[in-house]
Image (cartoon, rainbow, N blue to C red):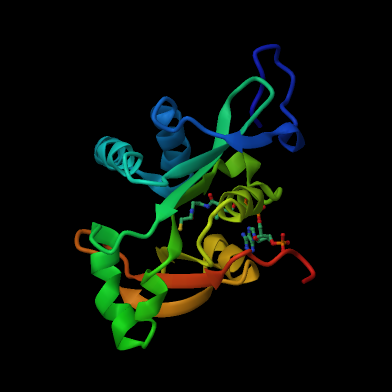
Length: 191
Ligand SMILES: CC(C)(COP(=O)(O)OP(=O)(O)OC[C@H]1O[C@@H](n2cnc3c(N)ncnc32)[C@H](O)[C@@H]1OP(=O)(O)O)[C@@H](O)C(=O)NCCC(=O)NCCS
């Protein structure tokens, strides 16, 4: 259990989701990702450069979940797909092979979504990704997730994402990924 400076346990329900200056909070965000997803110190250093480069992309946007004390406990960011960017060039042949190449046009890509383990399963992840994509002008969303039955994949399926390609290999990534796509707006619970 996390404790505030006053020693009182923090109530996860009090976290607020809103716009995040990710360039300014990149170290806080990567600290969340490191504990949620598992990153070594070296990987954090590499990711830091990648995140800052991504933020220079047109239309890149981020949201954060913060406690009343301002502690960042979750974040999401993404951007309109750019077919010339590395991610798109890697997934392109897999989507083409499955007849889903057209998904790469006019799509908002979720690049990262992470919630601190102490704050998971309280609706924060759903809120972050739903709010970010609700503000997208594109009619669909794309993302990639490690190709396994994870909480992330369960969440994405419940939001309307379906598998467009499985066993996608990113150079240097040890595990294969699934590429998933959903029409926007994302599904709400009980719809
Ligand atoms: C994926 C992640 C961001 C989800 O955040 P979260 O705040 O825990 O998710 P939510 O509480 O909003 O859950 C939303 C839905 O997912 C489902 N879900 C959450 N955790 C789950 C689990 N462990 N198993 C199955 N379903 C789960 C919930 O049932 C919920 O569905 P519902 O609202 O219809 O009941 C979080 O688990 C995480 O950070 N994981 C580690 C990092 C990671 O894998 N990031 C994604 C990289 S692609």
